[in-house]
Length: 291
Image (tube, rainbow, N blue to C red; front, side, top):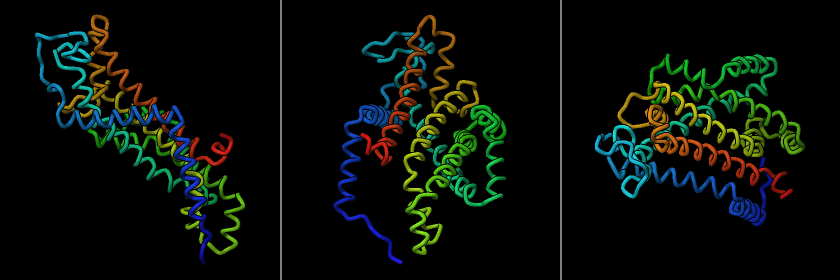
């Protein structure tokens, strides 16, 4: 049975309105700008960083920021800016991988939990059990079990945070299922799976997007924390958490050694959260109509 389609003119107007709201939203401009710069930095750090990020030069130990070394050097004379650039790509890839894994697990489980009746109640209690463990503690346990590697961190963060996605998905399905358009689609004979894919999930996309950006930010903090604790990948490629760890003994003598990586981590986390909030405001029809 054919389904009603939104006229092309109305769809175009809605897209233009959404894009206008994003362009005029300072949170989106700031978040997208920082994330774009981080992406460019990740590519730069892998292709041609200013200095070798692992090369030691003891004649230039703890140099302050200058034209030669933009963010200064650490206790081994390594260029901090080059080390941050080299660690950007692994950080972004780990966070993106963990977010995708958490979403791939959480969305189907949330749908089943909402639609499976008493079996769904059992799934809901299991999710409560997962959420009883703090994300960092669960990630720490899983990394100890599976070993310190980028794959293990992605798996650990994804498994630690998928209950968050499942909970949001369950709430979206429950709230949207009671709306008139779902009842109309059911009355027209549309199968439940198509109602979920074509109507319920798209209408709950704003909540899922915000949750995805939250998990992305949490995964950044998990990767940085594990690297700081010495449980990150044991490779020559520097990580932001490892840079913070190396700066512990020199942060009083040379504050720039720790301020730079902390500023990078903070700016990335804040920009992703702002980007998620801006997308939610633009995609949520209730919020966008108020604006």
